[in-house]
Length: 265
Image 1 (cartoon, rainbow, N blue to C red):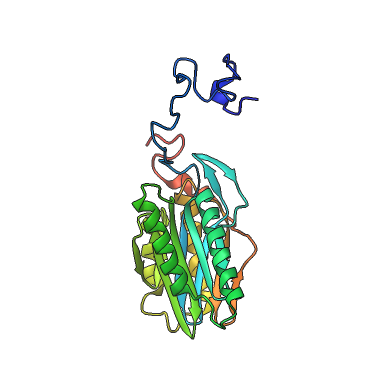
Image 2: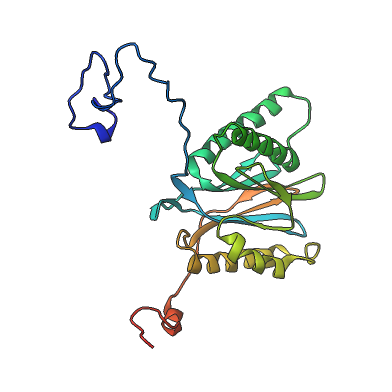
């Protein structure tokens, strides 16, 4: 069977090219090096997730992401978890290509297993996980084969909260409020206004309300978002990732926006 749909319906020579990898007008002569053109890299993400938001509050870190993975402009997968616990004190949230995120999840799960089997009493904290991801992403970028993700890493270890960002270029920075994707333009100013300067006094309920309202704003403004999301909470007690939360939304306000729908005035 030919596993390349673009070649279906074309004649082929099974003795020479069993899967018709090369169309007839491009098929190399016998004994030609089929890799002479070099290894090709993925040049753009395919199935993607949008914004991840995270803030520090008095007990630790709170992070949220919706459950949508889009295939281009198609809202294809609506129950994807983009928050991932790493060990007992760290959570990561991912924007960008979901297959690359799954690859990173495998690397991190293997890293946690290696740490456990070492039996030395030490465990990876959020700072170590962030540094590891920064090195992996920078190494892949340097090979011109990047992992198409923007990641937030948050956690609590030894009583200290940690929240940082890393992307496909290996760029890293820390802050008490972080966002990826469209949220970096729309939601981050809201988070900064509500959180910065209050990290030591901000309670869990208010932190959850701030993130929920920010996700509501993103759902109204970001065409690649969904009104179903999860919230991860990391405290000294460990990591907790909620079940999906569905926002009640209404679009009646849009009738008052000039230029919406059939309005001409």
